[in-house]
Image 1 (cartoon, rainbow, N blue to C red):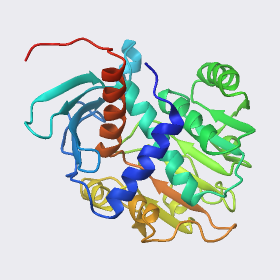
Image 2 (cartoon, helix red, strand yellow):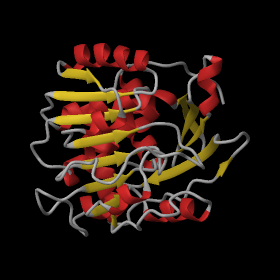
Image 3 (cartoon, one colour):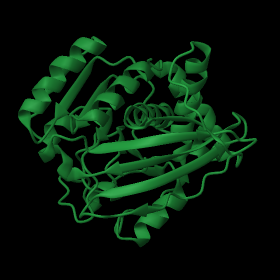
Length: 308
């Protein structure tokens, strides 16, 4: 069963508005770290407007690719808000890819130039796919330039996504080439505690919007400093990550995305502004997506019933 991306984007827009208005319950996600740059996070949320509650248990292991395993894996559990009983268990890998792209599209709608048609994608994995798909539903895209450290992966991505979305997708030979002329930029490499970032100040075009999904792993300090408006999806979580070693030299955000969507903070205010939204990934996004899937599965009598 697929989940239409426009429906997911619209639903997440509503969820961010709820967040900006303080109408949901979503504590910062705790995590454990068993190997190097790996993580396993618990992500709970309750959205009263949807009467949807649950938790995602998600892991990210950069070394998995060498073992033929996905970088991101996880499970998502929905609970009955009246009784607390689990009502659904589903894979979280696909949901994570879809909701992350949809959240980027929500941020871009408020912070990118309205008629953006060119995208730069750095890292052509699952998130590179999900983000380009979502952006293609939010903007009338004509061109994407894609870079990956493995040129073969980038070539495969260009062929697959160009055919799927009906836009031109070029393979870029470097991160700078991928960002050249791009009005929207997405970086989605592994999240690293001690990275060697590549993107320098000035590589993001004047009037461009960027969404780093890999924390500060790809963007140098001076590149962050060059941005006119830097937002995040959650200021509290970004501050938490700063305390444990990420974003050491990253400017503090002027607003979170919920505040922008709710009209409590401005989005883009000028054509020449360089804007950025550092999306860390929020549990509410997963619960919104899972709730949509669960309700449609019940309507269509899909899935397997298990005894409690």
